[in-house]
Length: 107
Length: 107
DNA sequence: TAGGCATATCGTAATATTGCAATATAACGA
DNA sequence: TCGTTATATTGCAATATTACGATATGCCTA
Image 1 (cartoon, rainbow over the protein chains, first blue to last red):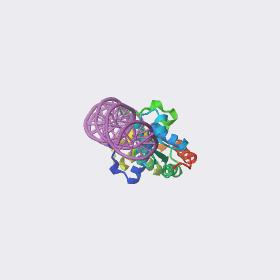
Image 2: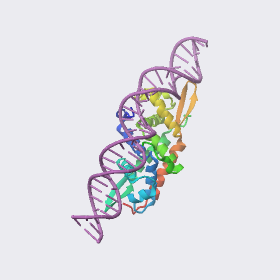
Image 3: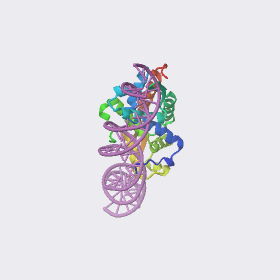
Image 4: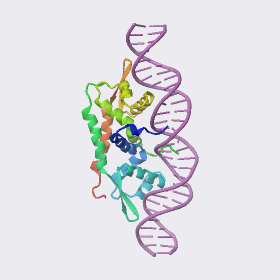
């Protein structure tokens, strides 16, 4: 198969895993790290910065956008892509919950 | 292709994305959430808990282990799988860095 | 040591992802 | 309107992932 059996999991779990999945590619982490350092986050700069072809970068941006990790606002000929900090906080909250609820007697 | 061009990214980025990738599947999130609630984290329970076949679960556990997210210690006939909180903290640190370094003037 | 449980590995079919060339679209300035 | 520039979409080949039946391995108990 190759198909994930997502129908057997809760909506919440599927959503959360989808966001993590979007971060599960080096190019997409690199994009995020680059966005963080830029004043203006424009796709052209990414094409110059990353050793990947323009269509490939566009595709990765689309996936980050679909996952809600970045937002893009049209700005003339170019597009300004930025991090969506709310989504980041959701992941953060999940990871934090793992730490606090952990049973200390286990392992 | 289908092959990720990981050789063009830094070791750090590749590692980080690999951990996120391991979390990018609903079954693996479900496993982690289940581990969190158990006193004894044994694979048999997972087979009962999740609507997936035993080999599939075993495979997911292996991936979580490879990514360093969980640790397994043999305990007689069964195995005790537990969360590796250090790895969780690494992800946490990355997400936190995104929040603090963000340029407020952008978007 | 034989049988029974718990877990891992193998093999494989179905599907998904990645990367890119070619091409499309869309906005701007001359 | 015509280029030009910036980004998106399409189509496709190569590879990766997912799920699971069959089977192996390894520990325990009788």
